[in-house]
Image 1 (cartoon, helix red, strand yellow):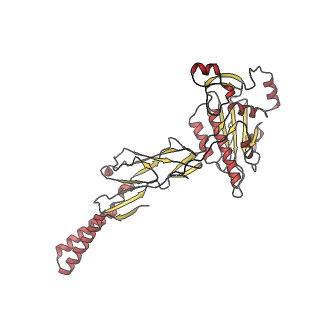
Image 2: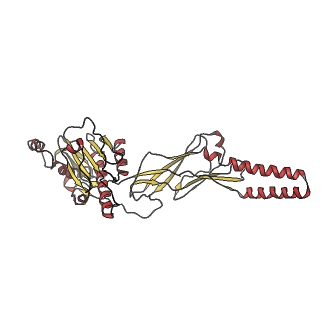
Length: 380
């Protein structure tokens, strides 16, 4: 919605024009009437053309990265115009809530990158605060303004909880098919945590029992032994938000958000291994299936974005169509709320471990994140 108002020069201009018109009518001086008509005409032309540069202006938030709930971040917002008629027009950009990088002039074809320091408290879509562009084109008599952020949003993904990889593997393997358990029992394994995979720097959440002290002393930094269960490099997450016929209580909402933080933590820790495959099926009004093969990338980002908009449904959630080919020796974990129904089709026939939301905080290999921080400028 464009707003227009006369500048101080425009008010003086209009007063002079009306004074000349009254004087011309009172004295019968035709040149004064003609001059006043010209001045009023120029004011009307400015009133009509003032919004033209803003209509041709384009603006959008970039999608290079997503915000994380409970963590400070930046929203990069681009403003540009490809119309040559706006090349020498001076814009006044007024930002709220710590917009930085505000210029006073735009150059044709060159986007202006603005940054917003955001402190989102919750996952989901965050409405961007106002960013007003105004111009007094062409005569400086009337100013037109528009909020460039109207309808613009940034996605906030859930934070990743701390998940111990070895504990997660032991938890998942407890309820696999009997035949699979017997097969693993016949393997020669150097330790209860799996085969030795290598050494890597210590990360937050790693157990101190995994530290290799001799190598740590030689390198001057903590190094931990990384173990991998043989033949277990594929994990499938089934995320079931369940039903919401009534408004969720605060306890239900807290446990559901904790469940999503666990899912985000599993995604992060599982994709550390370059040879690991991860799939995730999310039920809901818009079901989806995502997969990634080792390392952070678009696959991991797509999973976190799906968790960001995951919400309980008023009807039985739909599941996506399962892919034709899933990896062999697949570990499967279903994360669900208490009122969720069993998945149908191929998802329901899979051998899996079911984890309800109210049991997440009792897991010994899970450590939740602290999402509290000082109240800052922006929160969805």
